[in-house]
Length: 332
Image (spheres, rainbow, N blue to C red):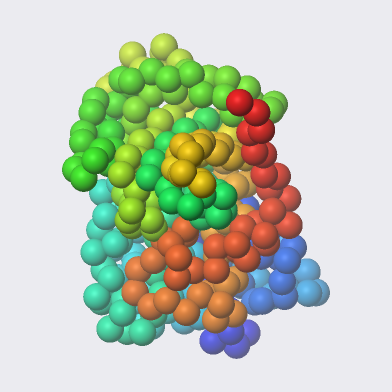
């Protein structure tokens, strides 16, 4: 057995978990401890990426928690798993995008801080990449007060199910000092995503971005989040999924629109990425775990990407080096 104290653990061998492992193998020689309830799936993933440079071991839950940091890339909820892992003394990076799960993870702040550990919440695509883009765009402003997120596409099957639920749920938005809830599937807005995705109608949905962006930048006065959806998506959102989800979604994209002031003038900045959603989530999650492992994220307790105490610029730089291409709207 490899020396687990210097390893990164990954729970989840599905589409997103596979992308996490793929990025870890491609960018470092850190040993990887892989765990999944589907033992065959975990063994198959390990066999694909096993090489002379990186040691990948398929292990049980007890062993994966002995890693220095554990990436939660499985389906939600993550909070119960996080409590068990914290009790065994590991830091964590959660890729959950479920609102209730994210809020339960944030409530663990005091417990995580008491253990002198780090729990990064929502280190995926949306949320996650959106927080990094918010931090990046913030440097172009003297002051920011609005952030509006839109997402197109899904990752693996669990992500597709979450997208289905999000349209049926209650969207959460921050508006001038209070949280507002609106029905999912309402509030149509035409959003332009980076090519080759282009323009899609997007609607309010139960997304975790507003909660995490507000934690990252408390000065924001208005935060909204929308997902792309067609007529069938909206009409069937409150029914069981009529068609089994694909093993992985196609080309996806996300964008964030930030508003604020520079030199006394009101300005708007828009940035986004176009890539398979699972790929974005995997690269962001893996990169964040590497930063925790190296001690470059020194915050204890719960934290989110985009907050000022994290090295967001460095994390984003490594994410872009990992093959995610940043697009920024230029024009009037």
